[in-house]
Length: 151
Image (tube, rainbow, N blue to C red; front, top):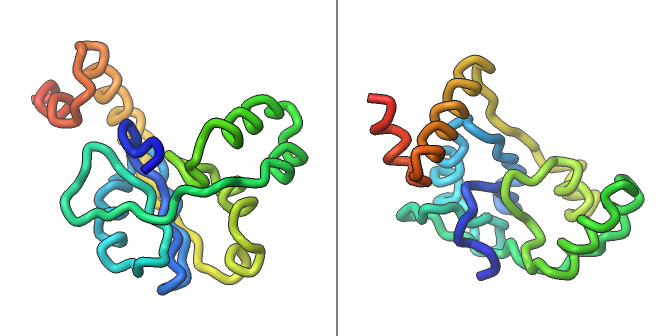
């Protein structure tokens, strides 16, 4: 299933409930994503998360993209957009910006579905990000190790 391993979280597009959840970094988005994904239909788009969480079933995130809208919007990113279009099978990916989601879904879906994300106090977010990086510099990529290093 594409590049499912190594991803930390993404997005959900629910046709069943007509919403797009855009995950932001360091905001408890994985917990929200796992909860929401359990209520999604087989036709909804749910991107993978790692480490794998019981009950979360990624689906429908792969597919080919038309890179032209993204190239026209961001001409300075021509090579990176083309590289992604050629080398990746993931149409939806890790912490994908809203503008790219908008370019990859039909206009009627983008215009009519409820779109949301979660943010948190900027200071808490910076501290969380710091602790995550401090744990990784210690040689660990595990979320559990990051928690234990703070205690």
